[in-house]
Length: 243
Ligand code: SF4
Ligand code: SF4
Image 1: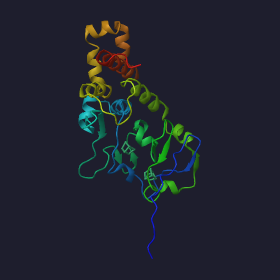
Image 2 (image 1 turned 180 degrees about the vertical axis):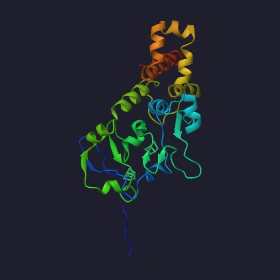
Image 3 (image 1 turned 30 degrees about the vertical axis):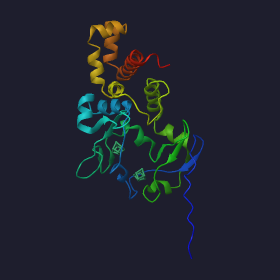
Image 4 (image 1 turned 90 degrees about the vertical axis):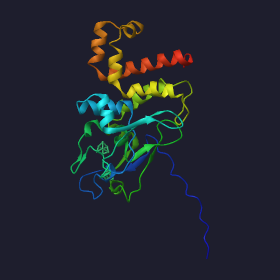
């Protein structure tokens, strides 16, 4: 007897008050398997946190640990982990877990959740319980509690600041001029932003005195916010005021 197969409906998105059950621990057979053969896209703030904990510059980090390019059709900057080519494992995973855990990227913090379509603060469970056995553990919590536990707030705030510098009306997946893509890439490479601050013209244009430049040089988060300001003002010159 033939059976009609209805298309599978996507699970409804979760909001901050939705609950799900999950806990991850080293006794699970899947432990660290999620750090293998995976696409992990990094944000500018992820790069800042990782290269700081590794005590290397942004350029060295980008060259040693990532693949970075402008997306072929949209020209949006893409920075993703370069996995170990032989094992396909993240270069920061060990048998005991993540070696950069306090500074792990946003995507790793969210896991097993991911952002969902349909507006801000919408999430979905991105993996099946047969792969991520922690989803079968009896520990129920709200999405909001999970995000707080994972220290998501500064990552979300920096990403919001990054998207605020984009051209007016920009949406994920939208086409950008390649020159704008290169300009946006500056947010990932704070070594280059620090070099810009050595330029007298830049200091004058952004009204920065010696003390402010010294403060930016010693405060990565402030330097990233300056990078956003710089990018936005350059975009304003190219495109007119995006606000
Ligand atoms: S697959 Fe899920 S439960 Fe297993 S280690 Fe990864 S996050 Fe934890
Ligand atoms: S950064 Fe840490 S949590 Fe993320 S994939 Fe690598 S080892 Fe896993």
